[in-house]
Length: 437
Image (cartoon, rainbow, N blue to C red; front, side, top):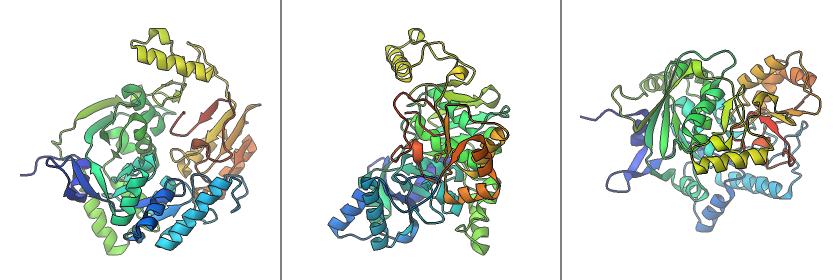
């Protein structure tokens, strides 16, 4: 009789091609889908070329330009940075030569890979998705196991549709209760990271459960799984439910007809067994979570917006005292400063964490009738070209522009700062990205 299994274990078991050691802790794992970008793929393609290998099943792949492209309000194919231009050109050549679909800079569906793939219906429950970006964990929102891989693993994945994979410890995070007014999925995951630390889930795959999670939209679940990597998790999962099915059904690349009926029936069975055992369990109460901000340079240096910056002298461990002192010094902050009184120079809405249409609607609702403060430069970078078009159709762009925000084209932008969207030394930015460093 098979012992009770977590959702994580079920997905890994279903995709295991071969056990690579005696206890099965390292396996050869089949990869259903991957999304490639211009920044992390060049060396992998060069390796294929040098070895004379082809891409196995290129139809399971999508290439998206998103990391180094400019987000200026008027989109052009020109790249101001010669290095970035070279990466984009080589990426286009690789996709063409190896038969991979490409959304280049002028493609109407261009955008950040973790926004584009889900909005097309390319990410489906039960899949394993490996890609050259750590925030591939985003896809756990659909009950798909997503994780980031390095360049050598990308090359192996391209050639064989598999990766050498070391199993993780399943970790359960339970969130129950109703979120207070103004508290979102982003606050939930920031509260988790503050609670367990930036390395608190190292070696683990998190499964989010509880009524609070069930009540989240699919977009909120993507935010949650996206940022799970910021506490060290290399995977994050939420069991698919009717909310996920309703989100997926109308999407362009989702199964249709009888294929949809069969798939949906199978997906509703994708869940942990009732008696499944987790290596660790963390419980959060939704009512106790407040709107969160980070004050320092690590994702776990977070607190309620009504709190104060910490005093290094009150920290118990020498390492923590050192980290807090260093972060305060870097940020130019004093211990005990009220977070809500800290002045900012920039405001950024964007990234694969918070740049979907739901996020832009919520931001616009706050901005309606308000103005950006004097001396603050504010910008919105939609997560995809499709999100941008939808926002313009709803008039959200006018709300942002009237409030004093820049309305820009899609891309990773200030999250990665690989183009012109970079903070100047000494500037502070209120940002919706997944990282504060």
